[in-house]
Length: 416
Ligand SMILES: [Zn+2]
Ligand SMILES: [Zn+2]
Image (cartoon, rainbow, N blue to C red; front, side, top):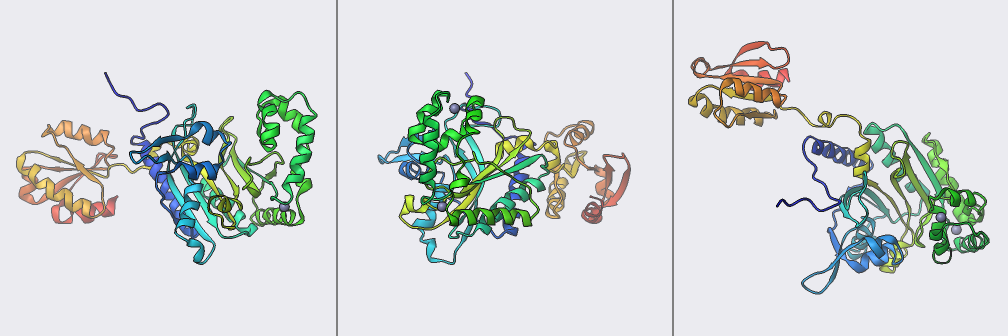
């Protein structure tokens, strides 16, 4: 019998793993430029953190968490998302005592028990940013543009930005009343929607059912109910995006179903992803720190699913990694022994280099060099050792040249 990876997980093998390193490197580089610093939180937390931080009534908490009791009797959960842990850390480490806002980014695996499908896994990876301690619309704009820079620099072009404001606890209840009234007056919403009208009417706006979408066109829009503060906040976000020349669509049905989300919400979507079309999404969660730690501190951020992004990176995975630069083939034991120190010397110069380990014929070694896409092949036998030189073969052109061993590193550095 053979043991397989659990359903909803996957191995990331070379050369695809190079694509992953590339995405991570790019994200780190962008965050450095924007002065966002990395935060690493544990992969598991107390279950209560997510129950409060994501919301008891959500699908994630109700059906999708990997929770277990540890040997000390604690209820532990593998993190299903990155925001609640960052907020927990911010509060626990009393970072509110330092200069604000704090700008963080994180990277890592998340876990949700969902039905696996293209681009969706039970262990998946997210890159996210969180800015804690500022209510400025400029900060929302900054996070959006940071994410855009990231995907654009990875070569994505076919995407669009949707934004909305979902108001605040002062202005939203009046809207929810109106929305509920409207929804209750319609009988043709799907059963999912019918169930949500009482518990969480905002989530009805999320329904993907085309009939429901049609009915929603006539529904009251939150934008007509924003208080003066929220309205001004929203226009400042839009102005910021206008200044940057970033086009966006306003989508009044774009919402987050939980009370602690406020003001700006956004999604950046691809035209290539089908139903699972969001590349990254986020917004303001001014109420979350109060929910988790009883502190009234505003915050905003986004999360981006790397599995989906990887689907969109069309270039061959090989382009993201580097080929082997040098392969050393040897003839005879003496040359093979010598190649060990020569390899180390070449590698120390920053060049990737490898050799054959099987004591195979020169023909097999050349074939191996070819399979590994080596740029250059060094050939060393007893003649070469005597003359203290190596034959250097350019694998692309087939040209060969004698190069003195003490010049070899210089020669390769110049040629590569
Ligand atoms: Zn408001
Ligand atoms: Zn529906």
